[in-house]
Image 1 (cartoon, rainbow over the protein chains, first blue to last red):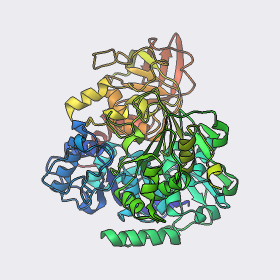
Image 2: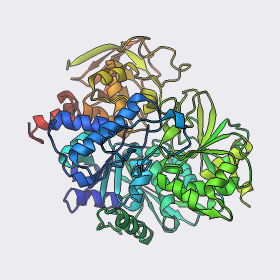
Image 3: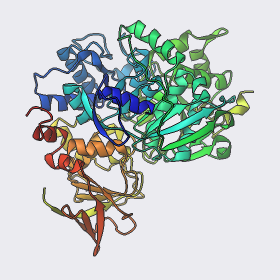
Image 4: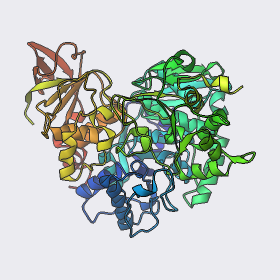
Length: 456
Length: 180
């Protein structure tokens, strides 16, 4: 069996499953946030009753992250709905925006977008925060009310996005009916050359198979090239499985995975034991292809979809109005450090927005020193508008006052994961997806730019 | 549900993603709150580019669409997992979508909510019709009558009774999977 089949078989209490079968599995974790949490809670209460209790409070993780730093009344209210539910159900893993459990959330416009407006428990983008908080463990089954839930497959688990109704069902029963997906294998050899990042790997592959090329399927990453990648890189790759239509993406768990998971589960008091699944000798793949990482180049997905591939060096004529770095895919500490390597000591030529994925990333960037400057200061000195308010922000548009939102028909290069029409705001805007290196080099020149010329 | 559904149709191209079906800034609306459910419906398809789709899916200042059937190309509903997408269509009055193929989560959410029938067509239809044409779905024979021709639709199989029951919970109760 493939990794996905083995994990789902275990979750179904079966010794064997076959692609195409429908099986009931037990969820290890249900993840939700401010956009889909209130609706999922609504389904739960409608169907199981106002007095109903969730199936297991320790297995529910609620991380508000989407529309937080906005004056939009409904957005602020939705965070309050999550708080009420967490209180009522005594959920230990609700990472609130504010510290007062009796309070209500209101964004203070007067204090502006850049300065921190959250309490001590707030995290930021759920997919980046989830493993850092010790909720990702090899061999487990994670469902989340967000399509980028697949990111946690980097930790050797089955992780997949679901809707509110399925989430409401899980809240009450802990179970979900899933179809066992066929598996596509991407066997990576070699190592990434200078100037090329994990983002280039996934953009290259999606361009190869098409942005519906993995619909209903699992994307399994293997080989020495996969082992050579760090956890942040693996997360970037599994995050975008959905951009090829996949149900999930998964890496085998190895020593790097165990080191990360053991540290993080230890820090937050979450469950520490887990049972990874190992690669079988006999696996059935519906697609199997070898990719040599050393041959890859900086890659871009052009407007209007993530499979519309070109090389950065082929797009030098595309002039840009804006650059954006942030999101689950592209807002990790390693992403900002890569960006800072390129812009250090230089000035961006177009307006450039930086939104760290999590509050931890803000701290790490401020505490990482390059000679006498922090990485945060390097970015600010280069002209990047850095906000301390970690969130999804303009990756998916959001209310009109969202930091970095494309409120006009602008052309933007972005380290995020999705570029369908209107994704970042105005439906006349155009978004080019690229790695943090490529976004940084392009911010310096004002047109799409191969970053290798800035990295010698 | 009637065994036949006749309506004027709204025709869209390939790869209509969930941001085009319901733009992200409307996700502040919570679908289980009745008033907000209706509002979601009024914004259905608001993300379609105006130059490609000059005919509004929902007339200005109205809450519902006249098009109870959407005919689409490949990969309908790709992108986010937002259940608001099939819900917005259902709340606007859509009863069925006929697409060449679907993105996985949209398909599943359509079935789980019971908001609409996600039919797959056996062939590409969007080059053979235009918005405003009249079509009839015959649910017994799994066919679509359109502009004087009859096109086969792929039977929905196991998911059809779930939509007919009104979604996952109703179906689960009806079949004894969860207590009534």
